[in-house]
Length: 191
Ligand code: S6P
Ligand code: ZN
Image (cartoon, rainbow, N blue to C red; front, top):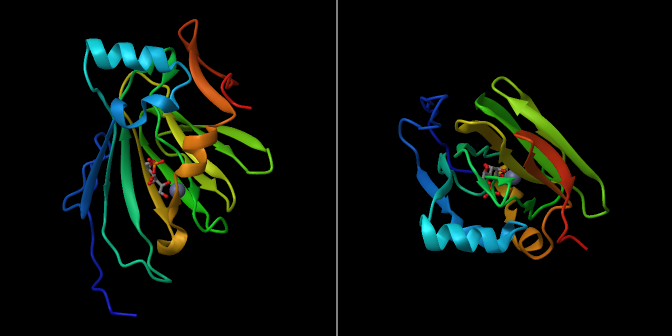
């Protein structure tokens, strides 16, 4: 394994901005319109208001090899699509046996998880929450607040990301606004 010099990254808790990110990735509504339960609402927003930013990821670049520990921030913007709060795409790790740690930096949101054998778990996250995503759980984060929801993630380099399974099947649970409050409901599109 090549020797990497230690380094420190300064993180702005309210924006997720890193001092020298190795990569910055933005996901807009057009990148994930079909992932919202109300696809027609997503199309209306795209046609009217335009292609809004849903989330931004800033991370350090490390080699994909045993022992490396990638980490990044994610900032999810506030808002809804057809009543469903802005969210990440969500994924399983390609190597299902790899877990992950999330740490809330600002705002509030939910961590929606499920396994391929049918278990679901939805946890609230605020600034200061350290959430553990164990091996075998797909994970998606949702911004249920009025401002940005920002968190920090740490995982093992070889975990990899399987987006296809969630793109095809979705999550069993959705987080939607009901009477102005977040509510966890069954996904009508899930079968
Ligand atoms: C990586 C980790 C997070 C997400 C990020 C964006 O394993 O779970 O850093 O990559 O929150 O979500 P997604 O689902 O688009 O990768
Ligand atoms: Zn992950």
